[in-house]
Length: 145
Image (tube, rainbow, N blue to C red; front, top):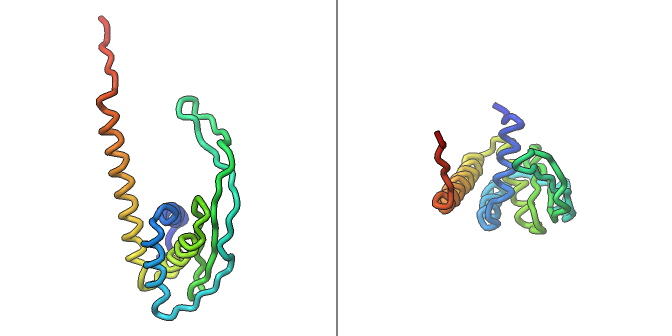
């Protein structure tokens, strides 16, 4: 089964925030079987416009330009792509290799998906921790009758 686009976007999003060491180790494992790797777009740093949505009126506006790095590879004929905030070329290239691994459903696909799941769990826990810290500051109003 070919991953659908929303799943692919989610994987790219999670790989974009993965720690460099985890990505490099996993990309090395993806390449360890002698897979043919071609770098289609070498990691390049540039800026992208960051758009945000205002939380009350839900208006979109441009926050400004942010530094980002992107790369694209072909791994045994499957294309992989990555973009990460900042200028870390190594992590970006490794993330592109991991994306290609998943697209081709190669042997390390499950490990890439497990890394994504760990990142997702860490995000969920960080959100829960933040809400736990904020909960004591919530003001509850009583209804006047």
